[in-house]
Image 1 (tube, protein in one colour):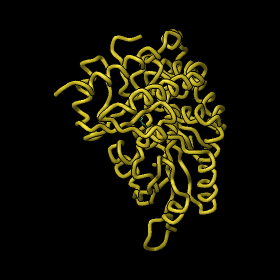
Image 2 (image 1 turned 30 degrees about the vertical axis):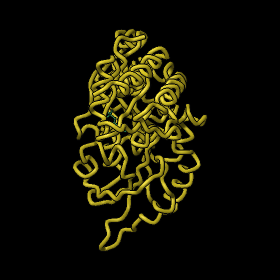
Image 3 (image 1 turned 90 degrees about the horizontal axis):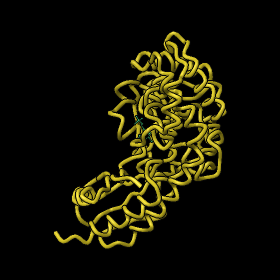
Image 4 (image 1 turned 45 degrees about the vertical axis):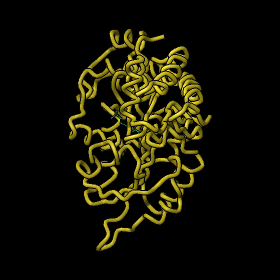
Length: 344
Ligand SMILES: Cc1ncc(COP(=O)(O)O)c(C=O)c1O
C-alpha cells in the first residue's frame, strides 16, 4: 500500500532494490568508445529476446522511434502512421523535424489498423511523388487505451509491406505488455517488423532507457544517428544494469498490472458520470470519459491521494504498474466513488 496512489503513467515506477544493487555494482566503460560491457550485455540480451541480430540502448522511447524513422528514410520520404500514434501526437514533430519525413496518417479501430487502408495509402516513388518508405505501428497502442494489436494483423501488414518494398518499424514501447496479454512472445511480434523499439522505463520499472532492435546493418547506421541526436552515452552501464534486471524479473509480472487495471475499470465503469468501454481495457491502461470536466475530477481525486491524468476536456487516463498494488486499486475505486458523489 502506498500513501499516494500514482496512476498517471507506468513511467512513474521507481527502480527496484535489485536494480539499485545492480546499478551500484555495474561494470562500466565508455560506451561511445565501445567498451561498456554492461551495455553490450543488455543489447545482446534484448536482441536475442526479440530474435533480432543487434540492438542499441537509447535514452528514451522517443529517441528510439526517431532514430528508427531517420535511419529507415531519406528526407522527403513518406511514412505511414496511425493518426493517434505516439510518434504522431507526442514526439514534438520528430519525424518531420529530425528525419524530414512526410507523414501520411491512417485510422485504426480500438488501435487496430486496417490492412486495406494502409495498402491503399502506399505511394510508389515517381518523378512527382516522394514514395512511401516506412510504416510505423504501435503495440500496445497508447491512445487506444493500451489495446493489443493482434499478431495476425502484424503478419498481414508486414507481408503486404514486404511485397511493396516498404519497411515496418514497430513502436513497442509496451511490447512486453502486448506479449503478456496476448500469450505470444515479443519475438513473434518483432518478427513482423524490420525494427522494433521497446521501453525499459515504463512497466518494466527502469529509471531510464529504451532499446532499438534490428539487423546488424540497421543498428550500425542507427548508432550514428543516435550520436547525431546527442544520445551517445558514456558510463551508461549503470542504467543498462537496470535493464538487464528488468528483462530478467519484470516481464512476467506485467500480468498483475493487467489484472489490476481490469479490477479498477470494472470498479469504476458503472459509477454515475463515468463512461468506460471495458473492451478497451486489455493491458495496464484504463481510459474513461467523465461527464464533469476531467480536470475537476482529477483535482478531486488528488485530494483523495489518487493521481491520474486528464487527457482531454472529458477524458481521464489511469495506468497500473509495479508501484501500485491490489490494495491501492481498491482505495482508488473508493476515491472515485467519493469524488463523483461530491456536491459541487
Ligand atoms: C507508445 C509510446 N511510444 C513511445 C513513447 C515514448 O517514450 P519516452 O517517454 O521514453 O520518450 C511512449 C511514452 O509514453 C509511448 O507510450
